[in-house]
Image (cartoon, rainbow, N blue to C red; front, side, top):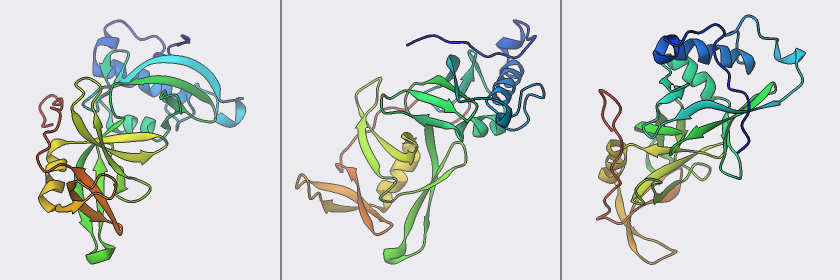
Length: 227
């Protein structure tokens, strides 16, 4: 990959870059350069700039547990993380981008862009829908546009459940949410393989969860939290 400029907070000391305050200040400056809100007072408004300008690879990554890092340090301000998440997408080559009308920057994602942390059921009978909530508080229904798939995790090759959330992105279901789904699942015959699989109904469709004896890949735990 071609290397480009790496944005950082102007005048930040090396000590700033080792703590969350430094990551937050640098992230806020980056948000301003991307034209996201008024995070950087000195940044030119989007309508005054030609774009999107390709700014290359920046030192931002989303870890396997869903934590966003900037310049090697976790971003502590959730509103800032949510702001970046609104302009994140994955292209056909599998690269992840923060893209606005102003600039386009490539970041690294270790596994899925998001983690599904909770679920609820909305409605009853054939009208019932399963609604998932991600770690950035986005709600995504389980439906034809947002299917659930089981595929190997990058680091282990063991199966894990991923939800399509749009813009080429996926959210990894936490173990607790997946087993919550299993608890409401029934057995159904897959029309593709003829196997008996666990399945749930949502938005008028049958969604398959895998074999009844499936063992999910171990998921990383956030500091002080559960997988």
